[in-house]
Amino acid sequence: MRIAIDAMGGDFAPREIVKGAVEAARGLSGVEKLFLVGDENAVRAELALYGDIPDCIEVRHASQVIEMDDAPALALRRKKDSSIMQAVNLVKEGEADAIFSAGSTGAAVAACTLRLRTLENVDRPAIATVLPSITHPFVLLDAGATTDCTAAMLVEFAAMGDVYAQKILNIEKPTIGLLSIGGEDAKGSKFTKEVFRLLESSPLNFIGNVESHDLFEGNVDVAVCDGFIGNIVLKTSESVSHAMGQWFKQSFASSPIRKLGAGILKVSGAFAEIKEKVDPEAYGGAPLLGVNGVCIIGHGSSSSYAVYNAIRVVGTAIEQKLNCLIEEEINIIFDGGESAGE
Image (cartoon, rainbow, N blue to C red):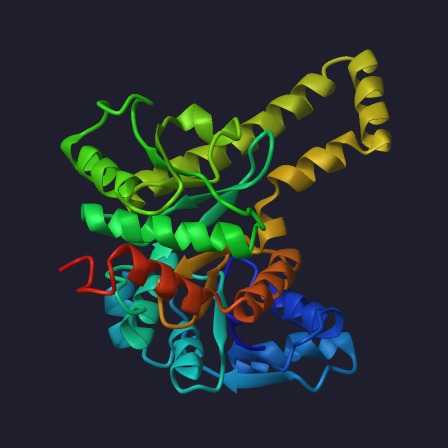
């Protein structure tokens, strides 16, 4: 696998990005080339910390960086030599098979959509985020790539989520749920009712409407919504998870007996087990499904561990021919006819 990595994207770039790339080059099989795209001097200064660097790592210079507060579309026009744009160009030109960026999500989505275009019969891309439930991980999409959707687009998202759950999460026949305000068929807006009708008539394993509590109780494998709602769900979930962590720390520190109990739990590995389940870095990042290339978008605070896992997930997506399978499934759903958005 050949991966273009935005070395300047993220809160801890380029240090954590470079560290994760070096660890992946040394620890993962099948890595043919890792392009570290960014300020050459800064990237090489980080690489110098690791002694002998694997031959598969190559530095490509980019003189500009798109910041988190830059307007994505405007920044792509003004910063054509940005690390994210040059990384996407490597995929466009066939030098790389995939891209990873922990920088501006909006810029990554816009660059991939504009330069790589979407797959056949895919009208808009979707960010697929893997989240934990009490039983098993599930996929939420769209988590923020496309905020204004047609009903047919959500069917495309469902098809892409179905393939991702099968090939990446190893779920044999994923259940598909439509995120709504009630589980009953009649609940929801005019828009969700139209999506419900289309999903019900599709060959997907559609189980109907699901509510927010169904997500984390493990009642669905793929939850579908537009990017506006999905992004709110994602950020609310992250905020609640962080708040709960702080509440636990405050509670365990409130008395000697609780500190003792916390120590026992820590030694037993209970805390580590819970952290592993809720840690988004274990999944590496969220794939941007539907573009003509593999793209993984990392959290802005991605550490080297997240970068390593993102590269691992990219390898699986390439090995499983994820995009080919997505095209096949969407063609089946729409009978190989016109694009769903038309």
